[in-house]
Image 1 (cartoon, rainbow, N blue to C red):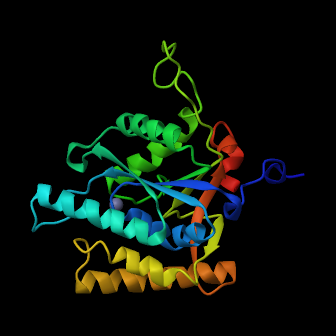
Image 2: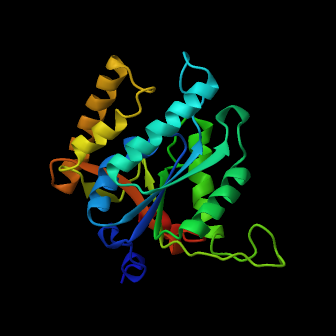
Amino acid sequence: MEIKDFIKNIDLMQVKHILCVQPHPDDNEIGMGGTIKVLSQLGVKISYCTVSKGKGGSNELSSKELIEIRQNELREAGEYLGATQFYQLDLDDAHYPSEKEITSQIVEVIREVKPDVVFTVDPYLLYEAHPTHRKTGMAVLEACLFSSMKHFPEPDAPVPPVTHQVKAVGFYASAHPNTYVDITETFESKINAIFKHRTQFDEQSGQMIKMYLDMQSRNNGKIKGVERAESFKLLPMIVTHMMVESESY
Ligand SMILES: [Zn+2]
């Protein structure tokens, strides 16, 4: 018997509630928009958490203007795919928030939302240049572990926190995926949702990302045996601590 048969990965199609944590207001749509739509159509509750308000995302608008517009774009895109709950952390790219700051704020959100699975960007994407992406991925992994521990953030707190055990963590934008979701029927919705982030795409960059995601979804589809798919590294929480086998999942 293999360890993978003993500690089985979860079936995404059976989950009830997911939390999608994105470094910036448009990452969930780009990384997993098709899957969010698939799951919301199955009745899965979708919650969003955004780490940075993305005020560095335009050279034309002032930070204040951009934040307000991007908050509206974020909600419009998320609701279009079926998300019903939105959390915004107040961590700013320009101030390089520490992983610890991000972790403790995400733990609070996980304890309130109580999701089965938490999704985010893969912190082990080797050449990822954006620090908020690297830190968010790692902070979410830590937060999924710590949200179940009464001693976090404070040992012996006079009122112990209400903890929550996440069943699995899922990484999008992963170079080592182990899970593919058929998004043939929802690819168009994914692209429509991405284009709701009007401050982020002009004609040329919009066409570029559409072509890239078109090719990417077809490549993933070949592996899954469908027309189009999105890919994830999905790990049951139990293998995320002291388990060398986690890499083989
Ligand atoms: Zn981003």
